[in-house]
Image 1 (cartoon, rainbow, N blue to C red):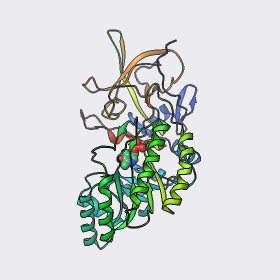
Image 2 (cartoon, rainbow, N blue to C red):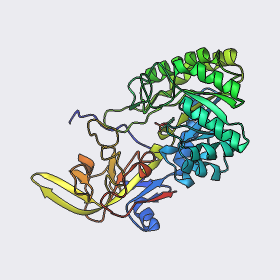
Image 3 (cartoon, rainbow, N blue to C red):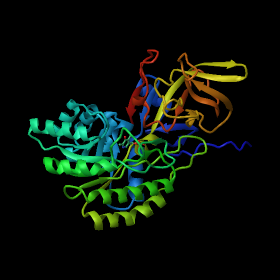
Image 4 (cartoon, protein in one colour):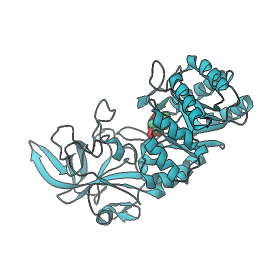
Length: 410
Ligand SMILES: *Cc1c(COP(=O)(O)O)cnc(C)c1O
């Protein structure tokens, strides 16, 4: 027995006769239906279950928004739109998909530095909420609003004076491209008040991919305190307070599933307090990966099997050009394996220690490094789990000019 850390148990998909079943089909069946490998498959049932479990876990009265950049496939967004209370977009392209889903403009917000005039114009015309990233962006939004004859709906994205500890990606505290420094916010609020823009509230996002309840609790507490402080200078009541998200999922060996119990226990009294201090403010949590990542798989096919000085390589037709994050090149410092399984031999034997690689001429093109997997051969399907977020659209498809993967919602 080795005491190497293992992946957290994953049970979002049934296993029938040792074959992984996604959307009611084995992956061999699904591959036949799709017509090609590699592909991404997203399971709508798994997404629905995740959202309803989350609502069950969180105190009543919190709104859940879906941050579309995690997975902007239109069919996925349509499905998510029916489950959540709002959508957060990060570009005009995402905004079009959000509006196509039938989500009312009042439930859509737009964050991200570097919104161009075209994007501001599109957002203001649509009547969605702009999460302002700088005083300059406010001035441009006001000018554009004037030419359109529409009062922009604006929230102030605050760059807080604290950060979400042990986060996968830190996005606040210190100098940051995101949001307006807390100390600059009062002046911006004054300007909004004078301008006639429609003030919506605050957006305070302090980090991403966090698995530690105590870090999330600390950040949420600091977020409410900061909001109360800043609200003193607000031009009106806060309609909305977006407290960010940051809920993580287990990707790598040794990681444990996030326990929402303590987070929720802390949040419940915070919501009461918020109501007492701010009134009928809608408190929003915005999540991307937590809602969709575990519902998705990436499936590729073994095209060669070779030995090299003691290492067995499964060479597949999929790789970092389709799934950059699984290759370890999307924000990881030390490469670790995503959970990978052999599609038709998930738990059973025989097992082999193999490295699953892609077809690109670079040593970075690794999907699984020396993993013990159900034995596979040419023509067999390999599956990367936890792939429903930051996969397809976060990967450099053009690198080496292989065909792009397909995506299906099942
Ligand atoms: C990327 C992003 C999210 C989503 O982050 P996840 O880790 O996918 O939950 C939410 N809000 C903002 C502002 C973001 O930039």
